Length: 126
Image (cartoon, rainbow, N blue to C red; front, side):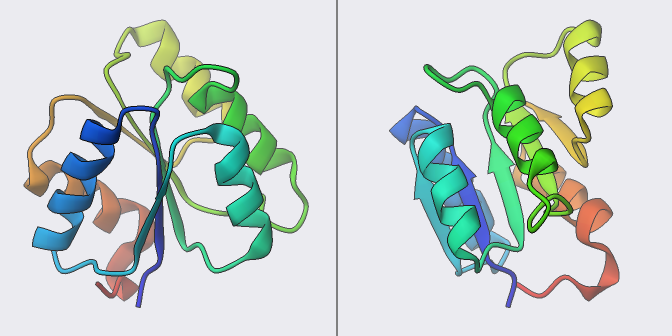
């Protein structure tokens, strides 16, 4: 079972992503509202995929991504950025920081499914 952590400061967006994941068969979904809370949960283990917004107060999704990549124990954790920030330079920055996938809001559940499949491969289990 794939365990997914959603981090977004918008409770509405977390609910939309969770609903899309549930419709795709993913039920092991946790959510937090800050990058710091996401890091804490990642470090306690049990996360197979991180889905993060970019524009969040205190710690942006890009800063969270860099912190995850700098963590020796969890640096290989797959990260999907789901964000309204879609300028080419921003996407280039995210790719340079090691993001595994990038999805611009608004999105369709099938686009989310496609990105997860690309990141996790054929072994993905909802």
